[in-house]
Length: 183
Ligand SMILES: Cc1cc2nc3c(=O)[nH]c(=O)nc-3n(C[C@H](O)[C@H](O)[C@H](O)COP(=O)(O)O)c2cc1C
Image 1 (cartoon, rainbow, N blue to C red):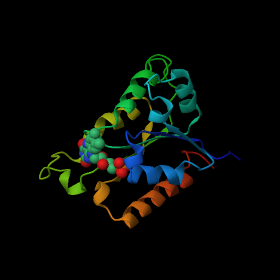
Image 2: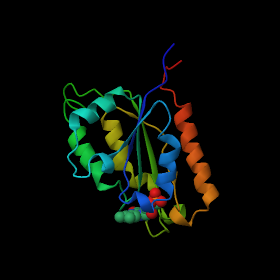
Image 3: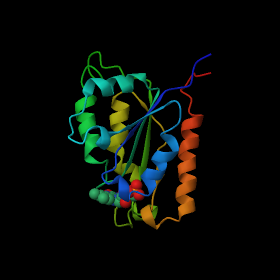
């Protein structure tokens, strides 16, 4: 029998004290026994990311989660820096770069705008799925399986019970997670 699957959650928020959604989402998953919760701005306030330590954390994981608010149609800046300094040739892609092959990847994101604003008639013009293609394609390029993202649209206009049930759904998804072929 296999032990619980390993999950690493990478988290970033620029002003956690002002966060409503991601703070609650963080709080409901960070204490799960098989979750390695890694707050990037807390660990690396100076942006000097420890590449070897993060590559080890990624190697250990069956499921890799990126959790963050959407800032300017993408992830907070430190996530881009994380990709540039950790997902290196020979590790994540290129010759011998198979460390992430077969792992699952889950994006957990929140937006300020309601979902109707993501489409041809909305202020953000494009479907949300199209705006996150760079994240999806990065995961796929590294050989990972891109799972259906868990997204909460609407930001601080949402009632507290909607945020709470979304948070519990996040926790349930991590608790229920099993890699393909896991018994
Ligand atoms: C720098 C910055 C950029 C943002 N860009 C977007 C955006 O492109 N689209 C959007 O819908 N919301 C945007 N927002 C709103 C945040 O996504 C929203 O406030 C956040 O998801 C709410 O989660 P929180 O309570 O954890 O902060 C932005 C907010 C900030 C501070």
